[in-house]
Structures are given as C-alpha cells and as structure tokens.
Amino acid sequence: MESVKVLFISQEITPFLPETEMSTISRFLPQGIQERGREIRTFMPRFGCINERRNQLHEVIRLSGMNLIIDDSDHPLIIKVASIQSARMQVYFIDNEDYFQRKSVLKDPKGSFYEDNDERMIFFARGVLETVRKLRWAPDIIHCHGWFTSLVPLYIKRSFSDDPLFMNSKVIFSIYNNKFNEMLRPEFLRKIKRDGITKDDLKIISEPVFINIVKLALKFSDGIILGSRKLNPDVKTLLKGLHIPILPYASQEKYIEEYSVFYDKILANSN
Image (cartoon, rainbow, N blue to C red):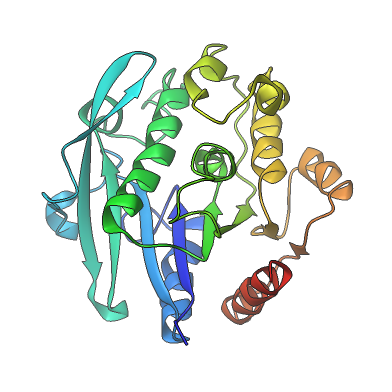
C-alpha cells in the first residue's frame, strides 16, 4: 500500500524565522508525520531576513527558471532548499527578487504593512503548486498554515482541479491568531483570477480584509484545524456556520498524533 503524501505549506517555519506557535508547529509537525510513515514535502516563502549562509540554503536549478505572470508582469520563480539534519527533512523556499529580497517579513522596519503583500501571497501560492507539479508528486493532503497560504485552497479546487496530480488532494487549513488590520489592494481580485475561478468565487473578498481572506480559504477547504488556543472572535463566529470537519486546538504534547488521525478522517470522508 502506498504511503500517504502530505504537502505542508506554511508562512513561517522555525529555525528560519523566529519561534511562534505557527513556526514551531510547522517545524515539528512534518517531522512527526514523516516518522509515522507518511511522505512529506514542506514549503515556505524565502523572506529576505532568512540567513541563507547560516541555514545553508541553495538553489535547486532543475526546479527554478519558470516565470509566473501576475497582473501582466513576469516574475521569475526561484526555488531554494535547506535540510534540517536532525529531522531528516528538507524545506523548499519560494523566492523572487521583486517580492522576497527585503529584510523583513510582512511589514517594513517601521511597522507598515507591505503594499504588495497581495501579489506576494499570489506568487507564493502559485509558486508552490507549480513546483509540486515539476516534482511530479501527487499530495493526498495539502495542509496550509496561516493567512498567507489562504489562496491555495481556491487554486486547488478551481484552477488545478483537472490536474491529475491534484484531482484527489484534500485541503486542510490551520487558523492561527495572527490577523492583520490593513486592507489588501482592491486590484487583488483581478490579479487572483485564473482559469476556473469565477467572479462568484471571489465575492467573499470584494473587501480584501483579514477575515474575508480566511473565509475564502475555509470555503474551499475540506477540513479546518484550530492552531491557536485563542482565536480572533470574528474567526470563531465564522466557524459556527461551517459543515466541514473541524479539529479543536490540540496541546503541544498531543497535536502531532491528533493531526495525523484527522488526516485519516479527511481521507476516509472522500472514499
């Protein structure tokens, strides 16, 4: 019997970025799932504050070199990789000079939200999926961590729905207590549009604020995990009307086992 393949997509993973609830789970969960006999791949953005030399990142030439078009502009996709030796796992990084060279993550040193975070999240989501395509690796579960990954469920269920690699993939979205208060640019909707995505699909984010972007991710997910003990009240309200499996917050000692069981439950629901 083939082992279950799990694709992890996270906006932050320690030790490449500082320790947070999300970066810690995104570091140890893939290891724990791999140790349970599953196949894994793990992706994050190559934010400019990540020290390439210390973390021994190097470019994967055979995966780099593609261009992604966003708003009629070409943006070269560069793929880098680093190994976490103690876990015997690799992390792939999505990189691009326009989007990921600056020395901070989502805000500038003065605390202002980057104006192009809309395009950065589009580039990241599409970059991961195009790279997985190049790897010819068909994930059974795609587990997204954090709002920066929230376009992945939409792309999987709409733009990539006919792709044999993703046709049977189940998407799980982990929600964390990491909201932003700004609004993304109104052109965001136009830039997201791709084959298979309708105006109706994007109605939810006609006002592209945090809660609506999370709402979009939930609409196209097959399961939800509460990654933080305390969640934004608006998010809690959102969860009440959903008819898909939700895994409550699990403690540090138990989450790997509980997530693993949840994956099996989501896969069983599809059979």
